[in-house]
Image 1: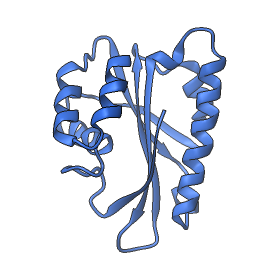
Image 2: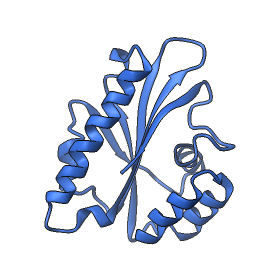
Image 3: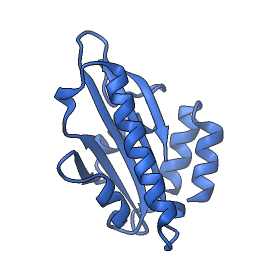
Image 4: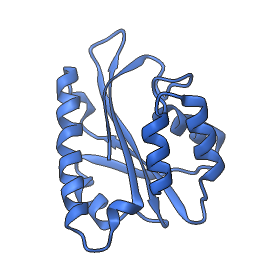
Amino acid sequence: MQRWKRFYQWNHRKPDDLLAFFWKRFEPKSWSLFCASYRNQDALFAPFQGENVIHGVSCRLEAAMQASSHGSASNVFGLLHAFADKYAAKQKVLGIFIVRGHSPPAQLEHVLDEEDWALAKAETQDPLVRDFVSGLLTPRGNKSALEDFQVTCSRVI
C-alpha cells in the first residue's frame, strides 16, 4: 500500500501510467475496493457544500485511523471527489477506498455510517466497474466516471 500511495502522489496527473500501475498490481485476493456515495446528494446545492462533506469525513476518518492501534492507516487508501454538473445545478460526492482484506476497517464503516453514506464492494473483474473505478482514480484523465460532471474538489486519505 505504501508503494501505491507514493506512486499515486507522484503520478496522479499521469492517468495512463497510474491506471496501468494500479490494475497490474491490484490483487483481489488480498485487497478490496469499495465505492462510497454520499446519500444526501439532493441536499448539495453549491460546490462548497460537497467540499465541506469531503473535508468533514476526511478529518474524521484520518483521526479515527490515527487513534487506532492496529495500523489501519497503512492499509487504506481513500480518494473522495466532489463533482458539479456542467449543465445543471447538481452536485455529487463519490469516492473509492482500497483496503487490505475483504471487508472495510471498522473505522471506515463507523465514519461512513449507513445513514449518510452508501458503501459497496466493487467487483473488480467486471469491465464496467473497472471503467468506473478508473474514472474515479483519474477523474481529470481520459476516462470520466461521470461524463456530465466536473471535479470541484478532491481529497486523498
